[in-house]
Image (tube, rainbow over all chains, first blue to last red):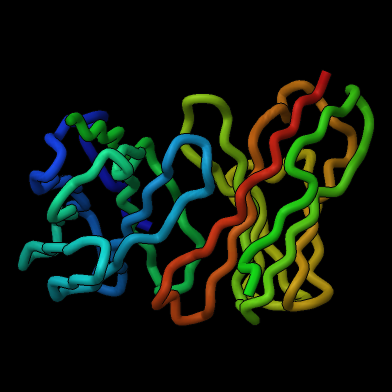
Length: 110
Length: 113
């Protein structure tokens, strides 16, 4: 699976959109981009995934560049409960095993 | 629908003891995985399974055994506990398509003294 690179940490204001970048320059054509988050010491939680097209669900939006070398997770209206570590993962098949990197520690501030 | 259930939630072992961490899912998921997470670190894959009777090693398999005799259960056995195995262990499951991602359990916090 392709390696992903994320900023170590970022802050965002409550109520504003949070844009989380992820680089995956070596991603192959059949690798999906998955996003998970881990709140405090809980088990990770699936957020969203995509292959080529932009995706949106009730939690977030995923924007994937046309060359698929990077993506952005958007939390449209961040709340304090969105404070977590966010992981961007490239995975070869939709149900394949996941390899976690360091993630981005997001702190939502009032 | 309970999702992924891990037991026990907390455990203290003495060096050299063995034990089994239990993981059960009721979603009829084919894929199951075990991860460990050391303090302040990301998750590392120990073992995984793509179906009953099929298991494979992940990134850090040494000191652990798994089996998958049923679709629902995926126990993780520590053969001879060592302090280096002090960690939080997460079990996860997914359907084959991955359309809903992996569902994780709430974790087992293991301390080896």
